[in-house]
Each structure stands twice: as C-alpha cells, then as structure tokens.
Length: 166
Image (tube, rainbow, N blue to C red; front, side, top):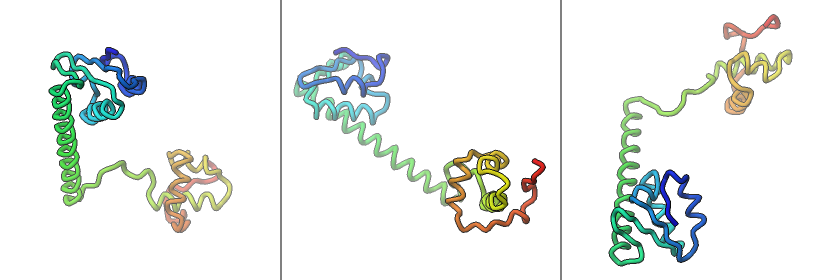
C-alpha cells in the first residue's frame, strides 16, 4: 500500500493494515507529522507485524539493516522527544521563578463571582441574563459559582451592578 501525507491522517491508514502488509512511503517524514507520530507508526508496525519500506532511504523493515535503521530512528525520535520535553519543563520552571504563570487568564475574579451571586440572590435575573451582563457564557458563570462556593454575595460593594432598568 503506497502512502503520502497528502493522502490524509496516517492513523486511518494504519488501522487498515493487516499482518503481512507493507506500508511504502517516499521519505521517513511521511511516517508522521511529528517525531512522536513517526515513533508511534514504527511501534505500530512492529506490534502489528506489518512492514515499512522507505524508498528514498532504500530501507525495508524486513531486512536486518532496514530493521536496524528504523530502530535507530526510533531511538533518535524518543531522545528528541525527551530532550524537548525536558527543555519545556525547565523553561516553565524558570518562568515560574521569575513570577510568570502560564495559561489563560481567569474570565472572572472572586469579586465578579460575589457580584453575580448578589444579583442571582435577588431572583429578578436568570443565570443567562447575569452571564450576558458580565460578558461570560452561562457555562462559565456556573463553573465559577461552583469554583467559589464560599464567596459572599456583596454586590453593593461593587460598582456597576445590574439594576432592574438594564
């Protein structure tokens, strides 16, 4: 079975391969879009008892040399993944030490949740209306109400609270 990355996701193709089949690709990079995906493809070939032929490198996994080539490439892919992962973790740790914190900023502060609770306790507005006023989705408001269950309702302390005129 001949394959190129232009043919679509390689996972779909791999799921069709049976024992004794041969996956023929032009280049090693055709085995996946990332090193991790290439490693998974080589592992799947070993586990599934099907073969890989890489035309540009003149490699076939059925031969001793071809199998050694793929094993070496697999080891290099795993090493590369390990190094990249370690560098990422070290970078994140260094950023934390400098006071940086990753991730998306919170949609609502504790004060926002307190304001929303006060408005909801009044029972004149629905959760959806309060969420729209606070410019968050209904699901986000509900998630934050659960996240801060003990936040006291003190909307009177917060300027810009919804009124009946809104």
